[in-house]
Image (cartoon, rainbow, N blue to C red; front, side):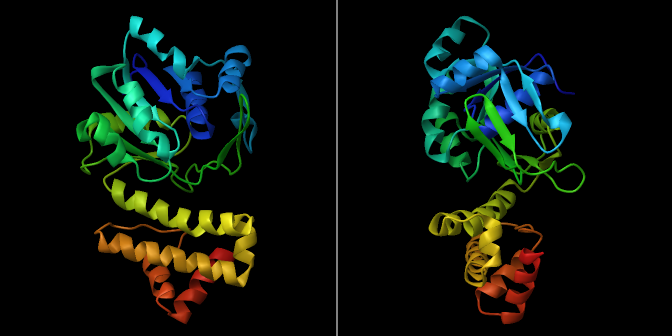
Length: 282
């Protein structure tokens, strides 16, 4: 069972960290949000954190225990954190993990609640035994101003999995089950034995979307309507898939497309490309 006596840190109160922190706080967990943006922290202290989503239950303002990173040392006078979600950008993983590690209990650990594959960076600071992965898929949250987060896609519910908790060694553990149970108050949650395969499948999605959007200045839907950028996205995903297979990962569906189909399309199979395009257009 989830223990609400655990003291939880969330390092990075941006779109995803803040979203998770607000729900966990509302559920009664002891959560401290730690962030580097002064205006954001001050707004949360004074007015709480406001979430907006597609349905009424997703729209609420929650009082939050938020602190500046410069105030973290003050927590040393109290009980240490039992575990910490690291929810910063990938390039900030190492320093953020270094910052929180000495404020954890002796058995404390860190969870990578991030895009990208950052478990190795985290483990370089706290060790593999204190590193857990948490993949957040198709959640699409945005911090658009201090103290305000929008969720731009509907809840996953029974239709799709949002949170996947995985140990780096692939076994099911009590702490992974506890984290999954905890996150279920936000949206669909599971424990996975395939952390690395799911991480790489998410990377394939990011490869399809992020560089093409950066190059064109358009969103994913607009790029999918353009024959050239739609096919480019398929080829990028297929190439990323081939690398993942070469590394030995067990890949999952990418936008409901079998990765074998994406790889075949990238290698010049016109029938496979047509099937991939059909699914993207749908």
